[in-house]
Length: 215
Image (cartoon, rainbow, N blue to C red; front, side, top):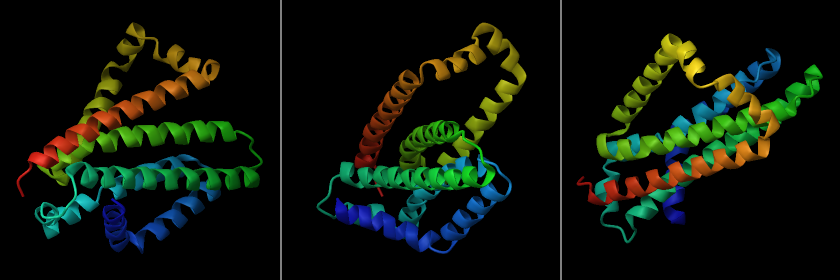
């Protein structure tokens, strides 16, 4: 398992050893200079997409066919990829918190709790989205999975734009979100539970698909 994890990390390092430091510095400078946390939130999304790029390497070099000859299980192969996503999003979370703290020291703001809550929310959404992408990527390929995700997001945003007011009338979303400040621990526990459940289900589905896949 450690060898598989190293393989994933080395593969990503070969892809992004120059690009990733530049992106990290750029987003950090923009966040502090423009006094905006958006770049710290967006950095989590970027790291999530980076973490699944190894699937493209696997497809290009025929890793799946070679992995079938190794004394490892499908769960270990898939698990290494999920672990890399956790590692990358964890790094983005720590980096975002550190840069957010620096930004607040410069600007004099004191809303570190808002930053922490926002980063945690983006991390959990990122983990859910990447987990949902993995089974589709194993089944149809990474590019189709990414395109499918973009289509889903476009449909969601267009739907909210066209029918957001009606949805808010049927379900008081604003009032519901206001309860986050009243019950933050409950919201955090519920969000973590949902994230963990989605990841577990997607992991199980990915293992089944990978085991039956013919390379």
